[in-house]
Amino acid sequence: MSPNTVSPAKRLEGISPSAMRELFEIANRMRAEGKKVIDFGLGDINIPLPQAVLDGIKAAVDSGKTKYGPNQGEPLLRQKIADLNNNDHNLDLTADHVLVSCGSLESLFDISLAYVNPGDEVLIAEPEFAYFGWQVKLAGGIPVPLSTTMENDFKVTADQINEAITEKTKALLINYPNNPTGAILDDQSFRRIVETCQDNNLLLISDEAYEKLTYDGFRHNSALDYGYENTLVVNSSSKALCMTGLRVGYTVTTNHDLLKPVMQVHQYNTAHAAVNNQYGVVAGIENYSSIIDNSIRILQGRRDALVKYWSDIPGISFMDPKATFYLYPNVSNTGMTGKEFTTFALEQGVVVTPGNSFCFDSENPGGFEHVRVSYGITDEQDIQEAGLILKKALENR
Image (cartoon, rainbow, N blue to C red; front, side, top):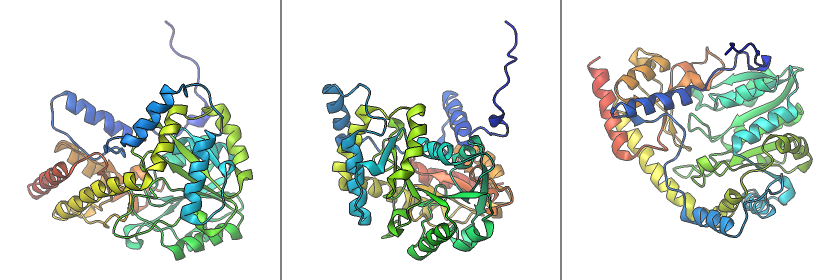
């Protein structure tokens, strides 16, 4: 057989593989070799699928809801999502203000393809879920990182945004509650950011997939709270309803005209999310409070265990997570970068993700000095064990 001489598209030049997925594969290989692995790598959640969601999916299958559905999503689900946001943010949305997708990543990719022209700049607050910047690049745009650090609680500011705006700036993309840092935005900071977008006619894209997973009385402020019509909020059932592998996300806006270009991309991308899974989300929303309360109870126990046992690890420091299920320690006082610490931890059977995987700006200490520790899939016993393993390994290094 002759070698492949077909060149890949130029848009793939410079697109790096996912470090998180690479670590996921390494961890699986180590397990296959019979080694004990404590995995804090992948941003998954191992809380069982809520019974209400499972029942909703089964009922949909049993009633024959396994055929093609509307591109925009099942009307019942879209209205449920609209009502949820109406209650949370004092809005008057209808089903037409919602577009259902195959997970929030599809929503974000569709938005990039719908709005980003070649050469357009998209400001992205980082550390960020690294897929954001790569999606902008695949659309032909230029991701412009706005670096944050632990010194300012990983909050991007209106002043940073103003300083970065050029004639090519098309949009701002933010993610609060933040993956990987667990940070949230306070009301005053968020309001100034929205006002800056409004003053400069920027599209505001706000990924709020972790909005319900907050601790210690902190409340998430949504971009929908501030009345700016050029706002697209992306959300997901993955984390809130423990449905990561079932791939149902959505985009919400007060200006349904903003959804039309996104819909044009979506219909030629995935057509629609799996119909039966959409009805699982309907059932999940109908039981939202009890599902969320259960998740927060479990995750807060894990977070508290991390804060307790990882505080004793020499050379690392961190901000207590206010939301999500991530700890984002600074490891520079160990004498290692985040990437070096990741290798060191892996040698001890502990999987974490290097912070530079979440930054386009290689000079941002908020990236290369850190690692991300995901506690969505790791119980309190393993959290304690990993803390003791790393403590001992660093003391004997």
